[in-house]
Amino acid sequence: MQLRVLAFVLAGGKGTRLYPLTKERAKPAVPFGGQYRIVDFVLSNLVNSGIYSIYVLIQFKSQSLLQHMRDGWEVNHLLKSHFVIPVPAQMRSPGESWYRGTADAIYQNINLIEQADPHVVAIFGADHIYRMNIRDMIEFHERKRADVSIAAIPVAKEYAKEFGVIETDHDGAVKSFVEKQDGAPTMPGDPERVYASMGNYIFSTRTLLRELYADAHDENSSHDFGRDILPRLIGRCPMYAYDFQTNRIPGDPVGGEVYWRDVGTIDAYYEANMDLRSVSPALNLFNRQWPLRTASYDDPPAKFTFDDDGRRGTAVDTIVAGGSILSGGTARNCVIGRGVKVHAGAVVENSIIFDNCDIGRRAKVRNAILDKNVRVPADTSIGYDLAADGKMYHVTESGIVVVEGNRSSVDIATLQI
Image 1 (tube, rainbow, N blue to C red):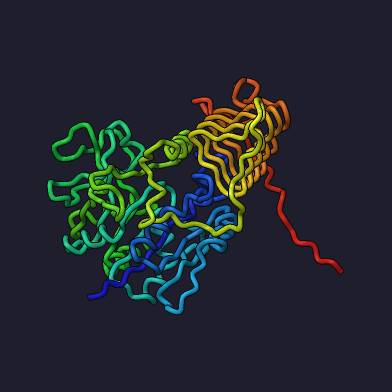
Image 2 (image 1 turned 45 degrees about the horizontal axis):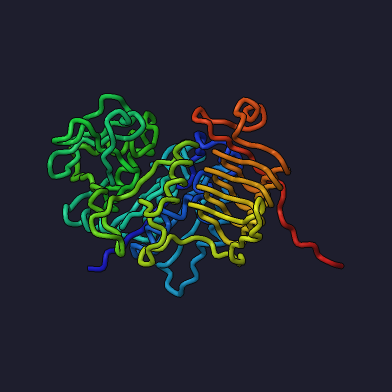
């Protein structure tokens, strides 16, 4: 039997802990790795897994995300079952409200499930950096004859309060679900780690529809999968934890470790970007059998110019996206986006530079994140005096300086009359 799979991507969160990167954009639209967006990871995982019927549920500050999806994820197929469609909050809840929780987001679009009549529904978040063969999780769901499967990954027990924690027996059957609490049950045979929910679920359609309708009419519910739907299903239906450590990506080395990062804070986001710079990064973007897809840009190649002492265009342990020019400047241990210019004598170290930034002559930038369109004047220093930086920029406790971009520079074609 050909299994019909419908996917929902939850891309409506505020991402407040990533402020100021989320001041003017949704968290899934935050740039990552030079030329990608966070949402590209889940969408690539779905498409690479052969799942082509995808609704992306959006809500807060969605313009940047909508523009990125238009540029990179419009699907023009003859088959009506192939689509990637952004869906805003449709005010279908009883109070005609915005999405009140993850379960309410799906409930407000329940008509899309009923119209498609899939065998299973995949509900995945858009907030994490990871690669996953989702087809493998669906096959696990079918083998177990499960009504619900929850993707799970072991984490140290001291982080239990940051995740929904799943208690299982030895065959993966879910015994309890504890949402973000200290002292959560540890893994069978491993007292130092807990099973953390990745926020990715496979539901049998009949079970999902039944629970969504019941939850929508429960005035005491917060309408969230982790807090309400999953705990209520304990003991009422077959529910299993899918061990993400068993997931294998075609084309990756056998025995390699899986990669999943919750980039909910500036520090976590910074570290995940820095992971890409290593000689053999744990997150492999160069596997052609499992490409990370994104928008297609007409950028020229990156360029490095001048080879004089004190004026040499170089990049070491650095990712440089298309259209960037290191014109006599130096970048070390950096992730540099599209259309960035680093001028003569400038040095950029241990930093993430978003698109279209301009770093002036002899400027020095280190341990920083520069948002789009930032202009660093000549002879300026960022990241060298945190007390001074803190008066102008956002500085994390670990010393990462975040410089807000100029969001007002929009290219508008002029009509000649």
